[in-house]
Image 1 (tube, one colour):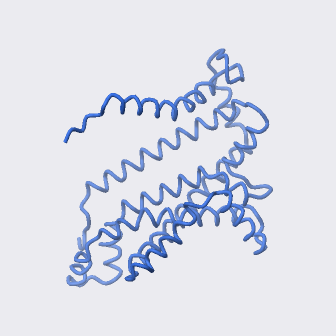
Image 2: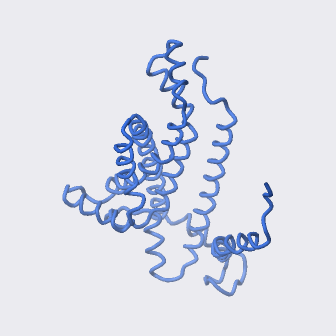
Image 3: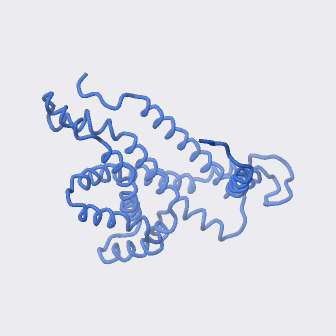
Length: 268
């Protein structure tokens, strides 16, 4: 099979990546502009980054965003893994398809509708908008993502592995911790990092459920952008982009190392 890329395909890929990355590099480039504008680069400076790290309020918002992302990703991963295991145990194909359809609703639904629904729910329940409302919302829309990442790994696992472990005298807990979890670890990591990324990037849902005195980076950047062009946004966006790249690299290193490791180890 000829796997060479045609010239037309190469041109398409170049144009596509240019459209995706040139605006980001343009933003990063002008974060070092001493002129304070998005045109007419005058000279190199790190003043925007110094101002950024001296902004106590913004540092608190960054901490809020990271805490929300880590907690929501961790909790949604635990719930999503358990949910994927339960769905995999359903014998009826119709029932399984129905559960998967319900699981996918939060993924395919517009974020505005999801955010408005959470806002109505929290208002009726009397929950004050703030940290907990944002956390619960992020957990809710991250769980279906984790399920979709983990369920294929569970489905492709051969039942003979479980039978062999039980024949060797493994208990249910040992089967779970020494056979199932190691086998589906790539899916778990994929679900965790996807949930983490979605939480860090989310704006629409967070905009609806955040309250006075609490906000996240996405909402704060939107508020700064509405006040006018500020290179502080460029500096902040540059840092977020670099952190995202580091997370992606770590994710691929972990998944590649996991693939090279043995699929399972029943007993040491």
